[in-house]
Length: 140
Image (tube, rainbow, N blue to C red):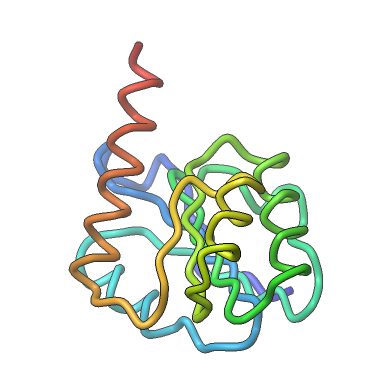
């Protein structure tokens, strides 16, 4: 696994959203990373290359984006592992749009599911929605 752009809370504005992108390796997510960074997000991209993420990868993360690509069974397993390893909101991106795939990902622990391709405006709106909700629970 290759981790890019590690980040620390001390170097960020308190409102900066820290995004962890877990890339299944089927698609290049550098464009998502660059676009989010240009909009003020702090982004770390981890390429899984067929492996599970290391446990420490979830530290200092406000939201996790798991690009499941066109994975089904392996994607469900990874989604469950991610959910068990981190309380951060989990947004799954996938090229699959079948209702059973979406329902299974949500049942495996995803907080949201978006079918690709997706516009950056919609992706960013979903990120804001999920992190706003998570931060409101932390304050309570």
